[in-house]
Image (cartoon, rainbow, N blue to C red; front, side, top):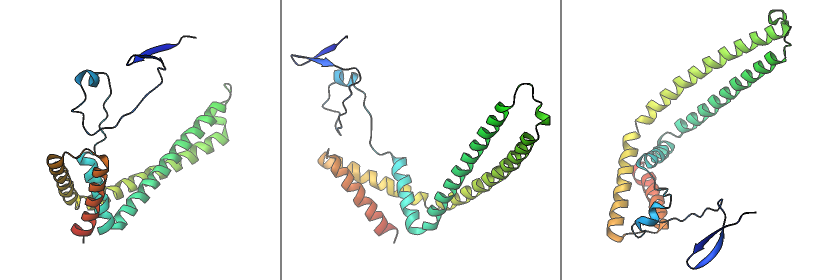
Length: 193
């Protein structure tokens, strides 16, 4: 049994290679370059795209909630159809693998019937998928009408954030959460009314 040991300060301690520790900070300026070279930095800050998309969803929820409901319904429908296709593929593979090596596929009537059924079902699913793609593109055209507003709101949000950090150097994550929640409330109450 090999034990790994390392030093923390002047103490020798056991080391487990599976051990991981996570720290969160809003200020990497005070961390030395030597330390930064030995750690993995993950940026959890919201991006312009994520804020814009989130705000677009909120705008649509307020202005045209039926669009968001329809989008979710279509996404679920497409997912169900894709599951069905995958299930049909698996059934076909099982049927084909169950035929013995000496059997003639062309004389296996149950298999032929199953293949005909799968072909018909697959064709119907493909038609449904094309129709849902068409519906999705129509919904996306309607959503685009509000995209400029959501991008403007995201720019405004980041401007407010930048201004706050320049003035107060606010490093507390709770301040960010509060400002984002307040901003979302402000967008839904002011811009969208």
